[in-house]
Amino acid sequence: MRSQSISARPRAAAPAADVSKGPGKQSAKALAAGQELFVRHARRDGRSVAVMRAIDYGDSCVVEAEVYPVGVATDEPARPGPYTFADAREATAFVTEAVEALMYLGCDVQAA
Image (tube, rainbow, N blue to C red):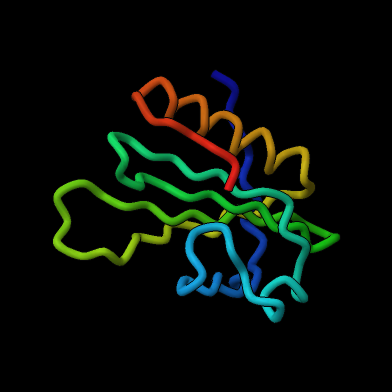
């Protein structure tokens, strides 16, 4: 497995998605701060497991994640990261490896 270097450059967190619109849907204000490249939504047995969103800011690319842990009594996802990369290629490689791992674990992953 390849290792990915994640930049430790401090960066203000990207605007959160408007969760009232559902996974993968952002408000116009959030999109103005960066260009959303793609969203991947992982489900297992019909239940959301994770949502990963890549946002290009020109000088860097950020991957935001929402994780829905099993057995937790809240519908609010954990939000690890954000993970900052030098460019979209590095961010895409990171998400691709995460998607492959989720699929290996039995998740159905779709573009959102």
